[in-house]
Image (tube, rainbow, N blue to C red; front, side):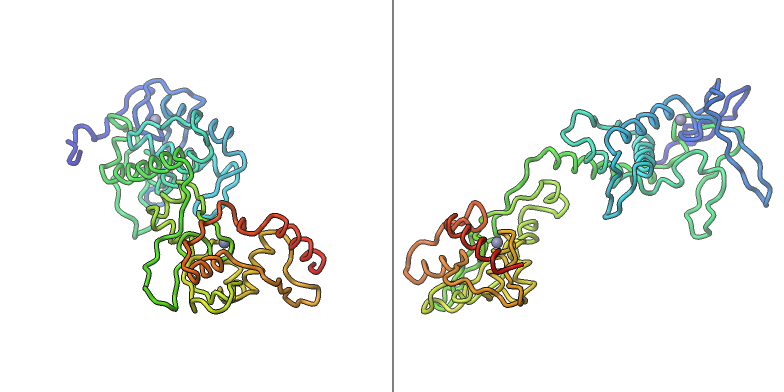
Length: 359
Ligand SMILES: [Zn+2]
Ligand SMILES: [Zn+2]
């Protein structure tokens, strides 16, 4: 609602022992002395202490935030790539909960969710920013910066006619947007992980070129599973698949196909195999293929002298596709687990040989 009438937002004069709540600004008729808050008012270089208190609702909200942080954020929290220690995490959650309160939004249940730490992290990520002028006590002095937005200041001896009445609709709209994003993350957290198949590839209908669209050109894995939360942050399933799978084209012979078929195979590499190809500098490379497999097997693919090992007859899954295309046979199915087109005995033997020759 915009254009709230001034009667609903005009501060009221205090009488008797009443003090304003330093957070929400409402009048507290009989302040609890243990909750005393003194805020300094500065005018023309003169500092006057202004007594305030904390209302029961605000005390309870902060207590809940501290309690939740103590139980679920002891290890701190990572927001936008920054790690905040336990005490800083507590402070951020207090801010997030104050923003929710000011926005008139009931906090959602936390303890009943599968991952309380994750939902609290979402609250901190989307709500703890922009709270520096949130509270009644933050409005006693003008903003120190001349470029800051002008705000309506509050006067000593006054209180809000109702909780948070010093905030305008624009302030609240920002926190409501944050709350919508928190809610989207909560929904994503409850959604099972998503298996992302490689995106479709347009066939060109050339005799020289083939397409291997169902799995990773090297390890053959047919899907990469990521959390629904990651999909929500990226946008949608298609965009998520494109961010996970790397488009690559290879010479089939370079990944173990017999010569004589198509000259080029277009397809995708999974993140692990793409790392190997990127390190070598080419996907069309037996070295990259071997490196991807040896990394998967947890062994080094290099000898002590640093020479690459050459595994005779090693085939990437894409090689099987190239051979199927050459013979006019149906494309092989992708693998459920990486490299499962190779026999377990073969993988064991390779791991042993690499260990012997490797580091
Ligand atoms: Zn209050
Ligand atoms: Zn792969």
